[in-house]
Amino acid sequence: MKCYLKTKLKIEYLLFLSVCFLIIGCNDTTEAYKLGQIEKINPGSKSYLKHEEIAVSPPPFTDGVFPCNDCHAFRKPNAVRRKLEWHEDITDMFNHDSENRWCLDCHDLIKRDSLRLASGKLLDFKESYKLCGQCHGDKLRDWEVGVHGRRTGDWNGKKQYYLCVSCHNPHSPKFKPLKPEAPPFREDAEIK
Amino acid sequence: MKKPVNYSGRRKFLKNLSIFAVGSLALSGCGPVTMKEFLQKNFRTLSKKEKDDIIKDLEKKYTAKYGKEFHVTDEPAAGGVEFGYALDLSRCVGCRRCVYACVKENNQSRDPQIHYIQVLQMEKEKGIDFAHSDVHYNPELVPEEGYFYVPVQCQQCRNPQCTEVCPVKATWQEPDGIVVVDYNWCIGCRYCMAACPYGARHFNWGEPTIPADEINPETHYLGNRPRMKGVVEKCTFCIKRVRNGKYPACVEVCPVGARKFGNLLDPDSEIRYILANKRVLVLKQELNTQPRFYYFFGV
Figure 1: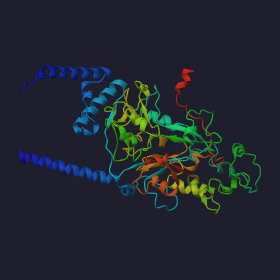
Figure 2 (figure 1 turned 90 degrees about the horizontal axis):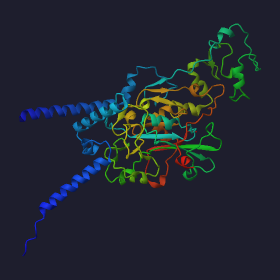
Figure 3 (figure 1 turned 90 degrees about the vertical axis):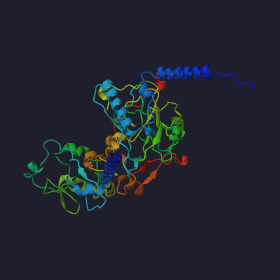
Figure 4 (figure 1 turned 180 degrees about the vertical axis):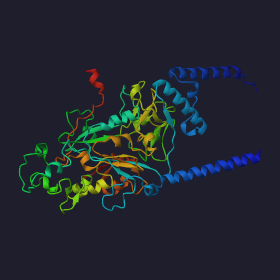
């Protein structure tokens, strides 16, 4: 009987130890990072991007505008700032330092399916956040560490990043006012 | 000396009778409470077996009541974790999406209405001024010109007054910092509500009503399991979600990304970055409640 009790205690002790190790193992975030099975966006070389992160795909283009080259391949490139005869939906709403900027400050004149940094470097539309960051450096910095912008998922693991263009329309980036949800029920409203 | 008359027979009888009377009165006043529930001990003194037993009973009860398969867990706090929250006052637009995401996740009563989150509209000219804030604002669109918004919920204080005043120790601070309530042990005296300087605790004045199709069947014993009439409840940082590694429901739903959450003990967490790099404040700092809920200015 005594012997049986002893082995039972021992087994319990071992179980307790293994559970402890498991808990410690689960909390090791660096370990989780090394596993990295999913695509990570790594803007620049930031050592503090430790957790596994995935980008939410950018919102879809307006129907029929992409690839741009379907139309622009047949048009003569014209770099002169002017009122466009096309893309009224965008020119009408455009409100992004419109006094000083226009299409070709972000879109490339020749390679229409790319974005273009001020340096002349071409960017894929998926990396638009780099383009935003060349003016809004402080926001890009905050976004990289997860302070600016929305994130969903696990606080201690895989998180989804929303891109700049998920919340801000690049042609009119100010966040649009929302309709608020219902206010809390007011007791005295009934009594009146 | 004369020996005193021995009344023990009668005394014993009266004592037993009174115990029986009080017991049956208590039981009849509580509505449909089983003897087992009535005799249940404080959650923190229960053994593993007792907890499992209670949870199994609860799952059965809830499944029968709401017609959905219910899960109740008692997942304990993980080591090396202390939860912290930060809310960006420069971003919040006062849209109240968080209020209703919270109601849904945490099975709050729809009628009588309970909201864990109160979004206060404040005048920019006055700054943070609770006396002149408005929780009932209802314009066509938010944010309104000249106003800012301060959502207030449980601040998960390091020095919580609510747990101090509880006469039966039905509410306490967990090792990961979450202040929880054992609804079965709560006697409904509402001392904690009087002690909380943030108005973060809410009392079930009536039998809570939740539409069966909106009930969230994934619950935690100390969190979002359905409550009963006569008990106090509060925000638990979505204990069911966060102890499974998920962000709280209010963080997930915030359309402007004003809500940030993480482990205060992890130097690489978002929350630690905010504390180190942003202008941070806590509400009613002078009361020394030491909240784990911070407000900051992202810009």
